[in-house]
Image 1 (cartoon, rainbow, N blue to C red):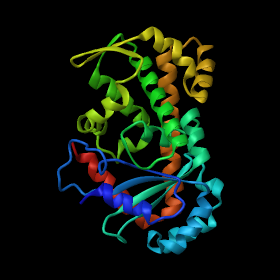
Image 2 (image 1 turned 90 degrees about the vertical axis):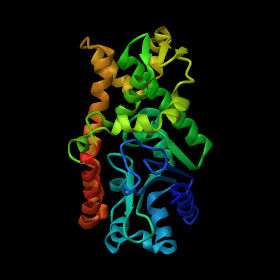
Image 3 (image 1 turned 60 degrees about the vertical axis):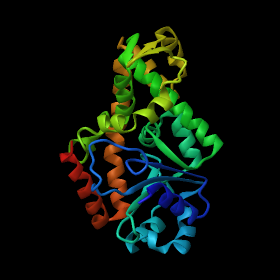
Image 4 (image 1 turned 30 degrees about the vertical axis):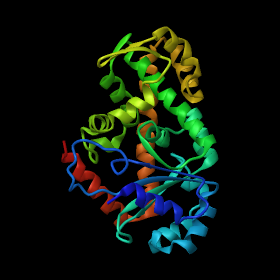
Length: 299
């Protein structure tokens, strides 16, 4: 199946989507999976207002919702749907040719998070390869800033003048998994390595044209660490504010960065499943989690 074309059809059939992005193994290859591995399509839909968008979509795409999910999207206030991670997913299983889920996030919240890292949930996903189904110049600019920040943070955490390409790419992809409680029971233990091995060219296109890299020889990068250190002041606002507080305790920058990202991932990886359960219900979440847990045994 051509998952990209199928995803384009899903977007075209739904109104008032400002921007749409695909991510995961349907859009960029991940090593470690066979051709027979069951896939579902992972999408992000950017909308103006989650409540209004769903109300309109109830009429146009009734099959997107179970009776329970539709009721929850109606009943739960927007502050609950957007709390904790800014995004809420509609998981659609058994009602179309392919299972899929789309995360709904409001444009202003997405842009705020990409620039501030107030919430890291979607920022982390946008740091890895994504497939642009429908772009938006304002959002795309925020995504570029988010990725530059991920590169800068990764270089600061590695803190070396000469870095292996794979080590840098793995560090970037690992940011969104640091402290994520789901990696303990419901994720492929080699997820980061599989992403890099399967999508290395895409990641190199995304990150190796940086002004921080002044030379590439074979599998090694030569880094302008003076510029890296001087640019740390341009990191996302919430991260800078956090590190300034920690600095007063005389901690080093690597410790500050790792502690901040882990604290975000731990909190959000615990909050999001609880919020998602309230919207999707037991049966849908059980089916989705069972597929995730199968990947725990993959290599």
